[in-house]
Image 1: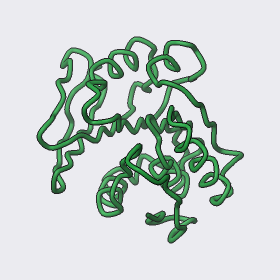
Image 2: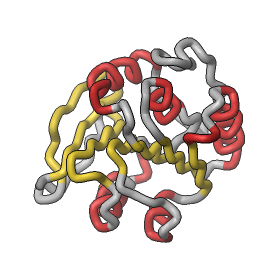
Image 3: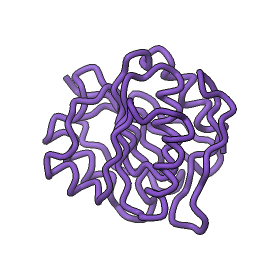
Length: 183
């Protein structure tokens, strides 16, 4: 796994051993970032369920101003911290360890964010809960974007009074859903 483009292009990222994380494939990440490139310069991003931090670090590499990484898994946090150091992005990064739903409710996560990367464990049923928290806490900027990764066979429901599905695109067994606020 590597940073695809930007000032850290080609930087190899570490990943924890085992099945505790599911990093977004390089080709899927490349497609996502190609489609949101114009939103990145100066953006403030939230890499929710960050795992290796690949999404937030890719955003920083391409010009985002700041990335907030939230991760619960201890092994992933250790690797994520090392990846932030490898990319020399400590000054633009905030790493919060804990359950995302609780972090959002606790006030430790300070919004709003221009882009939120949402990639929870596929089978955990967290999409709707987290989307509700994002809305209730005003974590997404008025012109912000949520990029949510899910299994192609397990699409999540969206409250269309709150968020609009801007676009959905599948890559093999993975689907990326782009959500915008329903203003």
